[in-house]
Image 1 (cartoon, rainbow, N blue to C red):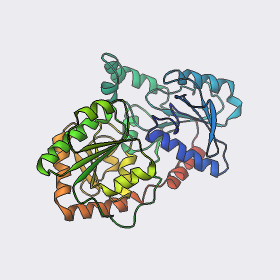
Image 2: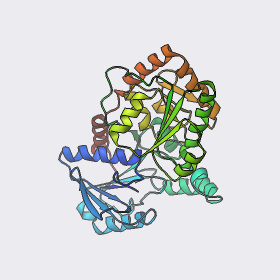
Image 3: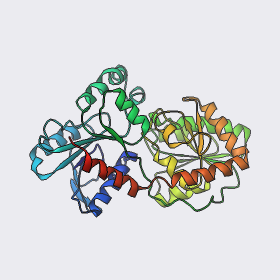
Image 4: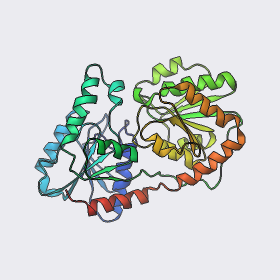
Length: 356
């Protein structure tokens, strides 16, 4: 049984939910019974089935944790393995699931995200006290991280048994670099929320447009910042909102560079998806992105919180056709390493071999 804040059908689902669904689908295919416990969202069913997985939805953004513990307590005998997917707040089922095998999955720590998504003084409390305290009881629990950066953070907090299972992508990488737009196109793909810093992508784009007057920025994704960003973005920026997977890949294929500003990531699925479409990425040198972007080969890393540095790296790609071609080829090759089949196999090996 997976316990997650959200499931992949939620309109707020992100990379963590994609990870859960793709792994769970393959576990079902291999003969396992899989249940995912997650929160309700507008229009959701309390129980449904996706790809052979049973989805139980109870509670809201915060009450889901209490509901999850209650569900585990009342249905403990129904499951052999519990997987607590921790997004800052764990479900804290370790103590009640005695005799069962319990694992944790942690995509990223909150750390700097506290300062962007919570008000003062909760942000300070979360960074220095709350998050380390909440994770303390999981130090001996077998844990899966999706990047070396997250593993390093967890080991620093005293975690003793951390294995890495990288994310996969749900698309087959192209065989060759596709034809790009005939004018410079930058693209941002992700949620429009504060800690993702989409406004830094826009600010970097404005620097680029001052040099390359016909440049465009395509913004793919939605979030509470969309209205404000659209109002202040200026010329050359197009907001596509949430799009189909087919549309997203088409846009990535046609763009010249993916912009990935953020204060922290678990890994960066959008980076590898862009790479699979022959598109290099430029992002900040932060945990997660320094794992998914091979600096100088599949894209560039820039000084964090510096839109001008992002713009400078993007301009290097947009101005130098030979460099862009070389990076695009390297990005395609890099992307072939990351498949969900491989991730599911590695995940299964951890679950089969781990003890709780």
